[in-house]
Length: 288
Image (tube, rainbow, N blue to C red):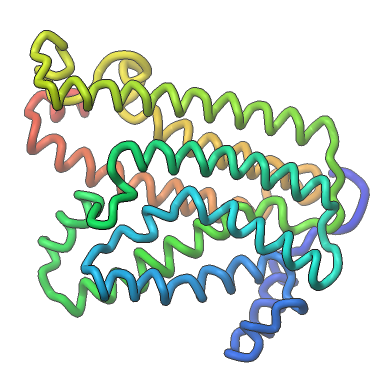
């Protein structure tokens, strides 16, 4: 661990969070530590996201904002520093904001070109789940507590690893880790482009392409694993967690959002593969 200001421990975070768990405390912005601000943002954002579902019957509004939430969280922390006094070294925070914005713009672009940002677009998996549940009350409960609150909590807290230590300075370590993240983003882009190219061939019914015949991608990075884009997305955030290590130790509590992301991706992947195996018999063989 490097010398310098001590990081916020989990017990200190819990005490700060507990002191703000009231309507007045939730809006007592300047007295919050940065981790508590992230939780407050997630709680506040739950209501407009769920209201969007109530008004449109589209559960995917938070999915559309996926790539915008972590950079937005850092922008709020930057505003807090300007309004309430400095917790962060400004160069450090701006560096992290630039890095997370690159990630967010790329993922939003990829989601948008697939039509995901369209007003009526809803992830087919949520459509599938809503049909399985059937009961409207249960669907609304799932939307509020899982889609909006739970997903909001881990999306806003993905940037948690850089928010626990005051006045961290940029060092060569940060540049090395950031470089690795950028490399991972490049590989994730390659995987997404290969998936996009396949979908375009599929739309054109290019039966000369062996993957089109199968109904799913098996070439390029997809020859190495079934979901390379998921792999590199997880790698991005594991590497981001490493920003916390010099001050907080090799294994510290800020790894929790990454572990939640792993669990979410595992559930999402299992559902995707279950649907694909029913559509494409050969996919079930590839899963073995």
